[in-house]
Amino acid sequence: MEDLKITVVSSEGEIRCEAEGQDQVLMVYMGEYQPGDAIVFETRETDAYYVIRVDDCMDEAYVYVTAPKIVYTIPFHEKKISYNPKCFTGERHYITMRKAREFENSSYRNLAKNVMDQHGDLGCYPHAFANVETRGESVFAARNAIDGILANESHGPWPYESWGINMQDDAEITLDFGRPVDLDQVVLYTRADFPHDNWWVKATLVFSDGTQEVVEMEKSVKPHQFCIQKKHITWMKLCKLIKADDPSPFPALSQMEIYGVNSSQDNSQDE
Image 1 (tube, rainbow, N blue to C red):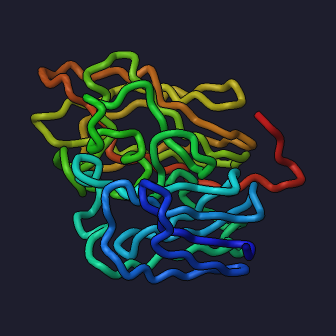
Image 2: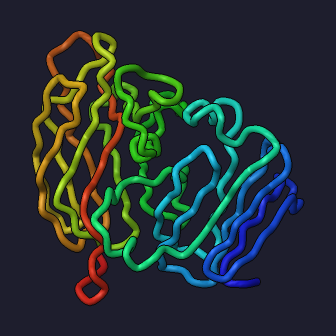
């Protein structure tokens, strides 16, 4: 195998298409996806940054990869409705993988966004997970909060997918960056499908360095922006969510954005 490889495989392990490359690999898969199909991304170099496109109807994902093989399961049926309905359809699919460029690795960016995030720790970061997702439905999964979709004036299928807490008072969501990062801004898009929705008036941000920040919010469709300086953290948790005094029991998070840079290798440390 060359440095990079993409393979489309069936649930039985049948190889439907494969492509290899050195610093970049491009695949055009001519075929219709079937339930159980997966796209496997392989690399010889782990603990490194890559840019991956799993579907031509989705943004590229800038990710930190810690495993030699990332298995991306094609969503079907109920799992599909939190995605653009054009994704993974038809008989022509454009899939790419390349090593990230140095200017991308050093640039100021939204460190939370990962359009290819999935359930489970699969060695591809950033990764979001939570202690509750409403009824286990895909439209309320933790991954929805980092997929880059900002629409928040309704709830349910794409583009209104969100992280739903099933009315659970101790709900919390964790964003694992997979490596040390330096951040200076946290932006929260709370769901604003009023009057169906409630909203949070206060929340706590807990960081991997042991520190906490309490933030306050209000009833708004606009993003809540917080300037918070943190260096060399590897994860952040949003918890201790306090609802407003409103009849609705349904607060939710549409999107979180974390702005900053990858920590320099010279100063990075494990948390």
